[in-house]
Image (cartoon, rainbow, N blue to C red; front, side):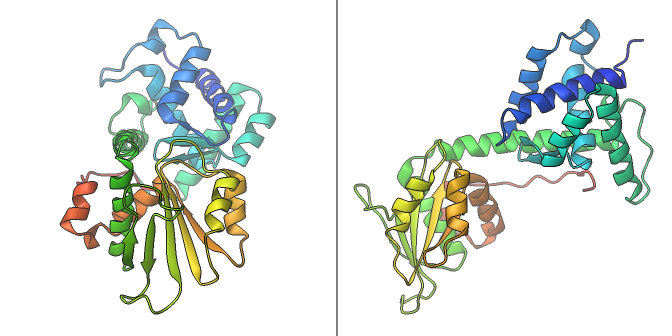
Length: 297
């Protein structure tokens, strides 16, 4: 019976790292896997499916990434895959595909040996839905699908509905929202809030909300910061991301304090404070948790 060798798996993984290293900010898992598929010529066996379901190539590649994550070479954030600095170093130093993947497996085994004893894994974990790696991959795929739906929902929300969602979150976090900008020109401030009901104690919180796809650059951030007074704290919320220079600008500020919140950060805060949201607020982004047995961290 044909099988996927360690060398062949190493070829898949090195192609994946090459693809991801061309995208320093990371790629969605599905896009990265599709890019690797275009770079390799799959055999009939590799392009086939396991009896339990799922394309053999994709499952083998996904299972191999579990080793690279535990090796510290790859990070996964809600379906976004990013090669770490140590992963780049390993890619440069271990040019032989088999040696590259063998080292990742060794590091995974070191991690595993430090964990409490568990059931032994099968030789081909991708073919065994009961294996620990299978549980990890299943968990990751479920998270990816859920996040794609949530991300699309938030990015497709009308701008002023999204603005109200941010105001609802601030209320749930204990802040007192004094004003939310109505449709029309807002002068760069979308929400005003205070830490006390009467707004008698500083700081005053000024919020700018941007429902955009592209990254907010340092010029955009500076335009917002110019609206902040000495007793103000700024919060910049975007459905996109921030450029590195914008993040550096916010981090190094001493007088004008500003917090940057991207879409992932906003969602994580929404989940954390979900219990404090009003029914009206929850209707803007209703969530329903589903519990299942997850892999050990």
